[in-house]
Length: 161
Image (tube, rainbow, N blue to C red; front, side, top):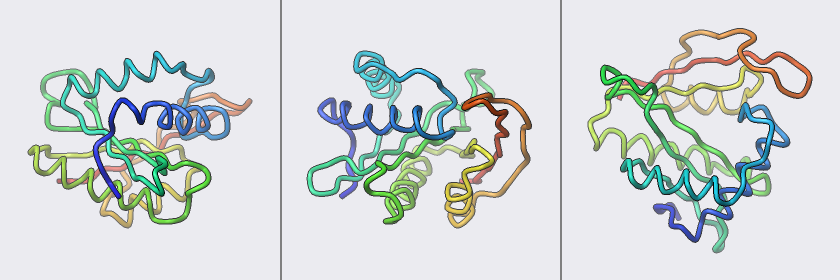
């Protein structure tokens, strides 16, 4: 089931987020976030009217997706950047794709023009999924991140809504 997140989901969202901080290059952060930080993020999303979609599996948050402003300047107001994360116990079940399909529909309904995906260049699964959803590769920003004792490249993808 896909639904809008509630405050009660924040602990599960935090677990997924922190797992990705510690075990992947999907998030270019070093330190785990606190519950308070993730709650402030949630409240900011709600205040901005940005969706946080939850894929629920047997009462557990199996994954979540959201979007936010691509850049803060007014000329970018119709461009958003997506984020999608799946709990490590629920990967390879089509959850990310299902969340993204719903997120894209929500973005279209809100009259956004372009959705951007910034994906670590080593994340072949995410790149493949985005391509299957119609995103096109626009280029690589080389050596823009540093994590786990190595330099990271960021691949840029774009979807015209």
